[in-house]
Image (cartoon, rainbow, N blue to C red):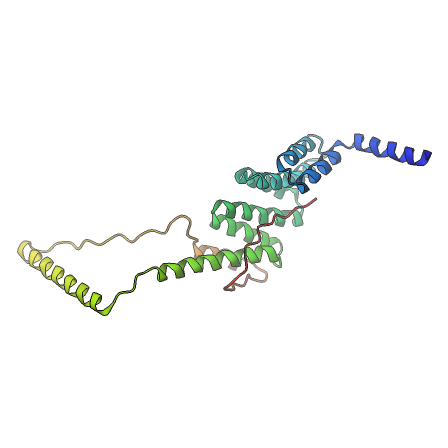
Length: 232
């Protein structure tokens, strides 16, 4: 009985001597219970007791996961970027993966792809990052296919009628040009791509820059891996 009491006293004493570990463990328990705001508070409290700058950088990763789950994507990206400074390769690749997920949640797919590629530069066999790159490419291809399918079909009679109308317009334009000399042709400016559209060439250049095994594109990729990496 005395040994049990002594053990309990030692555990409590050690917890008192290590408020950093206590705060992190409390935050992890709250995170697992879905209490992300509370987890963030616990991680922030532990930040004050971090024994070194490296541990503080590692803790930034956990803060980022809580912020992401709370829907604060910009803030989570900032914390994940700090955790990259930890020098821990495994933590760094997970941070880049989570950054990619945060950008994807915001609809900024070019930034998401770049983050996933950065994760693959650290670990070329990182399956989750490959899966998400494939998913984004496949979704972009689907959008392009839908653009083609959305064009209305035209019957032969419609085509003939439209051809007559175009010929009449051209004849009328030619008569006007003959009456007043040469005129410059008005050309419609080519529509620029939207900011949300992925620059495939740029992304492929990033992928080709990998010195290790390249990422294979496969149509019909499964759903995006949106679960965050959680370190400790």
